[in-house]
Image (cartoon, rainbow, N blue to C red; front, side, top):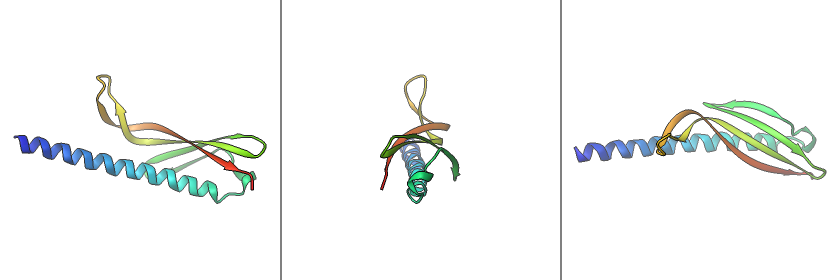
Length: 101
């Protein structure tokens, strides 16, 4: 019985690691797409990569743009009891700064 419980925990950890890798890959692909754009073309945008929906929210300044990249999809969420659980729609925000060349 003890080995069965340990096996469940290990499988759960592997699934969480796979999900975190997929989320990171989607974020990285989105950042690479944005970096390929000319500075003046960086604007609000929405995209889907795999199971993840990605939205860019751009704030402009004179010499740079701050881009909040919101990734929504499967992820880890805290349950009402305080325990981490897997949920289908978890938002995560990453801010990236684009400098004027």
